[in-house]
Length: 184
Image (cartoon, rainbow, N blue to C red; front, side, top):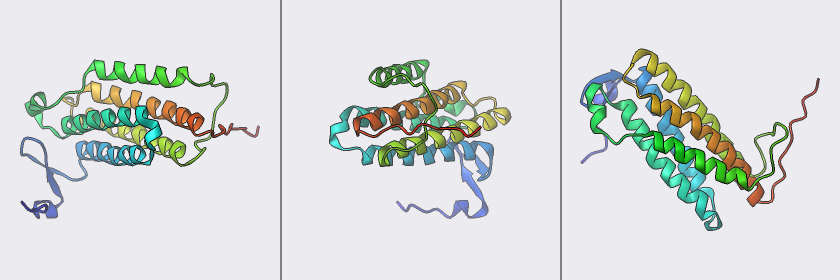
């Protein structure tokens, strides 16, 4: 099987279900940004050493859930009901993961800058791409009401997870959180 089909040369792409849509369609933007987030998440996973087994396993689960999010965004009409779903329990699990990460950290008393070492900074790259994916999903849902709300909710919570993960990794790596000192 060849990886190229040439069908997209006209500026369209296939949705799950077979219909074609313009490559700049709101749904395509949404699942394309989720795909970008998956690549960043995979890279963060690969940056983590074996000593970070727990976050690596969490990120593998996140990647699985993101694949389901992207599939649902790419689905046309009723087809999405036959695809792997994202559930409220997935959001609850993210909340438990966030709580677990934060339980090992000092309480946050100030804003911090997104730095502290390569894995810390990359967790923040994932956080910001996740926020953009969420914005794209919000835009797609305005045009396509069949976009599941749970996808937006999952991405919203996932960006919080990446923030908590960045703080957790910073502490694990012995990095000092850099406090933002606004000039007023």
